[in-house]
Length: 358
Image (cartoon, rainbow, N blue to C red; front, side):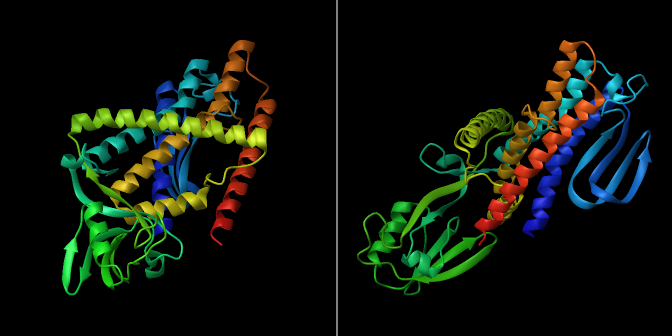
């Protein structure tokens, strides 16, 4: 199921990006030869107007093929290369804009449905489904031995036939302390499953660990009205953009000045794992993650690097300054070189993801 959900999320992100290119190219007067769902080999297709809509075997995003996008057919009607520079720039940046809009829509929807938040006195009145979530598990603790993991949600605790539910951390910690040295049964929500775990709290735990050896947070789903959700979604999107730009700056600074790649960077394998975990936690978590990935895709694509949308904007700027199109072979060579570098970086990050699994 993790792989399926990952493909669905990735396809939504990529298709939204390509739809931006598609709709703006059509409005600019360029001929869109193909809009592909997935990647070849082709399974089947149908043609509407001048565009072939293809459905392909590899369910990994999609693509748009625009007539003249590689610089050829500059003097032919409907060619991308024949459009004015500002129109080509709009088409080029449209995919990034669509990913930002998608993130805003998802975050706004999440605010209406209910987004996961840490609960305190400021938002408790707006929250529902409040519970205690495991943030971290200490090594060799009773919690680790019993099988508790981070992101588990504690539903209830039973002792001598009496079951108690908890929505406050202090109440749960008091219950555990009172029953130190006695076996209790915890009811745990793990993804979509309810799991029962037997555990014996310690009487004399190491400093800072507590009787179970877990760190807990109080979480819940916070909903707001639709009009406030739209405003909050915009604020959240802007905040995400700032955080991701800052993170990328630190990433490239570390890469080029120190010659190392941060361990926190995730490739396809790592993102698939995160997607599966978000799906297990619930739909609200999956919406939040999809929005974060959409903004990531937008920011990465606008970077001024060959083969990316940002790199193509730089080439358009050079053409504007130069007063004439770049040599077609030179432009293709630049984009091919950039693509190979990106592919190499992606393979390296994917390899690091795989190593983490073992």
